[in-house]
Amino acid sequence: MIGLGVITDGRFDYLRATIASAVEHLPDIPYRYIVDDSGADDSCAYLADHYRGWQIVHHAQRRGLAGAVKTTWQFAIDLGLDYLFHLEDDFTFERDVDMAAMVATLQRSPRCAQMLLKRQPLSPEELAAGDVLGAMGELRATGWVDCVDPFHEHHWTAQRRIFSLNPCVIPRAVLDLGWPDTNEAGMTTRLLATGYEFGVWGKVGDPPAVIHIGEHRSAGWEL
Image 1 (tube, one colour):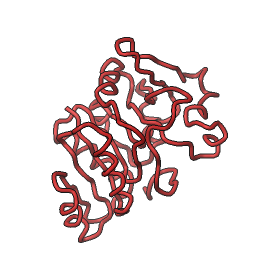
Image 2 (cartoon, one colour; image 1 turned 135 degrees about the horizontal axis):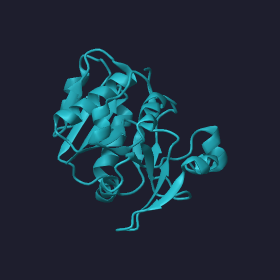
Image 3 (cartoon, one colour; image 1 turned 135 degrees about the vertical axis):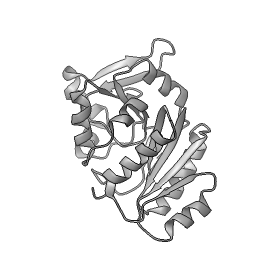
Image 4 (spheres, helix red, strand yellow; image 1 turned 90 degrees about the vertical axis):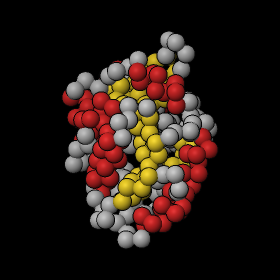
């Protein structure tokens, strides 16, 4: 059982584009919810009115990125989900997402902590390489590996550089570990210490699957 959890911190113009794109390109997911970390008194009613059929989880006071992720993951656990499609409020999708194939690959790869959709290059290193995965090329000797699902020939890339909060599928075992009181780097350290690696759907040279439409914030909003 999989659910879709979307985090927003009040950027509702971005959220509108993100959810419209998710509805168009993701398969029908019965469990859909929005975690609102805006802290605004009237935002819960606004979201409930504009996104009917979605559950709204509202923070009366802002908790920052770490707090929003904690809530998103705990709500997935409370729903009894086996997998969470984690989505922040400033991404759109370039094409349909083969969610079933991503989940099946994670099922056959129990030490893979996520299956990430590749975005466009943003950092100087990524722009120089022309590709998010290309920027990881220098790490190939330490665990950057091209993989092919032997049953369906889906390509994915295993890497040990970072666990990312960009759009991805996360298995329940990782959700159960909980999010630390820090950012992606802190979670990466926790997961590497327990033997996990991180999957990126596709291979080097594939076009981005998602586009980051917000301003570039390396660690999301304020922790």
